[in-house]
Image (cartoon, rainbow, N blue to C red; front, top):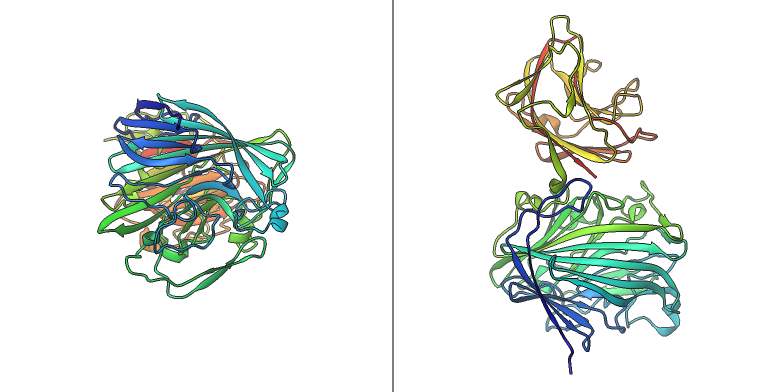
Amino acid sequence: MIRSFFLISTFCIYSMSCNDQSRTTEAEPASVVFVNDTAGQKVDVQLNGKPFTSYHYKASLPKPVLFPLVTTSGKTLTRGFPIDPQPGERVDHPHHMGHWLNYGDVNGLDFWNNSDAIAREKLKDYGKIVHSEIVKINQVEGSLTTKSAWQSTSGESMLKEITVFKFSQKGNTRIVDRYTTLTALQDISFKDNKEGFFGVRVTRAMELPSKKPAIFVDAQGNPTEVKVLDNTGVNGNYLSSEGLEGNDVWGTRAEWVKLFSTIDGEAVSITIMDNPNNVGYPTYWHARDYGLFAANPLGQEVFSKGKEVLNFALKEGESVSFHYRMLIHNGSVLGPNDINKFSLVSSKYKSYFDGKDLSKWIIPENNIWWSIEDKILKVKSGPKQKGSTLWTKDKFDNFRIRLKFKFGSGTVDSGIFIRGDNPRNPQVQIGISGSLKRDMTASPYIPKQGYPKEAMLVKELLKQDDWNKMEVEAIENRYRVWLNDKQVMDYSLENANLVGPVGLQLHGKREMEIWYKAIEIACF
């Protein structure tokens, strides 16, 4: 007889401060029902009275998984094989099941590719994740907390895993927030490897149409043939936050990627979203046309073709946490603006100038340069053309600033100081470079060194007579810039200063005017 219990929770998700876990846009209350089927070794999850997913933890599985993932209209977006095989689907890569989180090289052991297809004599090269406990089912937050151990196949525990799944819904968008903390029980190496990390294997209709067979070799050298199948009804495609589509997404970085298709005439999609607090943000994407959809922040050497090396490691007793968000949507096409409403970045922004005052900034003495008119911060040269910088009172390490600017009169030479003004900090230029005598908007300027890299596409994107939108991100020593919603610059500065204020610059020895508004900063 199946022993089960039901827990119903109603909850709303709300915004929090930068130092707290971020939440999605405000969602209507969702009824969450958990059914703990101890005999079947799974916990079923229902949202608003309809099946959504189940947490499977059978000892026979090489890792716990969420399976299936079902839309509000009842369409299953995950492949059935190997848990519940369906007619007409591929039966390759038996380690791809529902949604999971693991990796291809942990102290030399392959956790990613382990399955019941591995020959017994080869199991010594693989690892498994063994569920040990349902720690808590929270009826207030709609969350499921689990405990597992990452083990060698001989049973040696290497990592302790605590995962919190939070389930919610906004309209036709079902949301999974996964918070996973890994604690090292011995010194642990995650050597750069393409096989990882936060994965989903989708149903046939969400694959990209394939015209030829392919063979993929895993980290242990085992070939897997992916055969050509009938493409009727197969119309999946990828879209990344950087604007890339299809197979161009594989091996690139992005804050989020959407895999979308139509099933029986209805638009459906799965979107995976990275968190700027995660290691390796923004993650690389291991997104294959045959239906493997994964975020992999740890395989940087592989995806960058040797330009970057991470080889992430933990000492015994150290921990690392990851937070990913997954959107399961149906009934309409989620565009980039719709997806960004759920962003784990956008939810962290705080206003630093909303058109009212400069209370979060250090106003220069004898200020004649910075004024507020009609909710706009207007910046204008003084009679002696003396320069000025407006600094935030706060200091930042990892952050993103977004604002709007508009060129005024004169030769505009302005910019954003990142973490102070010493030579180990870049400034992001806005307007004409005094040294180069041409527009270098969105390019990094290093004091006493000049411009190490020039931003792309600025001529096509920059508006000379209207408002422009700019976002600048600083994550450790890596700097990225977006101009009018298009990424135009990605630069890393060795030995960068990693803490300091943000500054808006009015360059001296110029007759100029520039306007700013809607200044917001997100700290990570």
